[in-house]
Image (tube, rainbow, N blue to C red; front, side, top):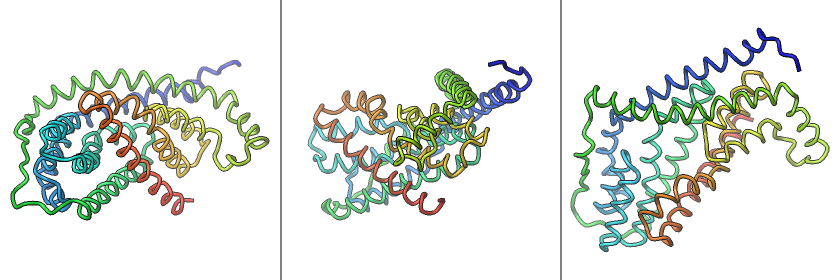
Length: 320
């Protein structure tokens, strides 16, 4: 195939340069917000919620800690469980309860990257992910209220002195250090995936897949073939990979915006097994006994998948 250099620049070169610039800018801003400990005030306000769920002061402290470090929060719970301060049931409830602060911990960076790659569609996708996190928390609070015994009188300590707000200079230094680590990994995924999907679209692969699906896989014909490819890529556990594959399809008008959001939601659901293997199990196994670690992971991922399925079903009913 002969390439027109001007057309290649306008179709691939300039969009890719612009994309990398906004990814880097968005990542830097999101990392700086994280370094400034912007969610500290939310942790201070969380005590009434933990008491509503009938969780003890240890669980309340772990919930607050999870806004800043999921590993630290789980370590606190593991030590309390080993000392007999909390039982298996409260450990399970507390671990599930911590999914929301852990989610919000990385929300600025998640939104910044998603926004830079898919534009305003990030508002819908991230908003639905936030809704799913809220639903999970509501379910845990309700279950805790129903199944946990009443609490004794007392307060829930925050124990957040270690996470006092940083100065702008300190936060900037921390943000730059994190940025330099993250940007290499993200661009290492984003650039080749963007180029690959641009080439696949130009070479007509998706048209061929569509013809094959129409002839042999009628039960999947409601999904565009590009969507299947993006979902498969996102299911590896890398959101940036799915977003990078989706962007050229949006630029070329190959899929509609509502289908793009649905693609990200489906990829989020199907990425759970890989996310568990690559990210969650390694540090859970280092904090909890093996059997307990598996139990907590299965419970948390099941709750997350169910909440995302409910949100996805609601989106399909409203957007299609």
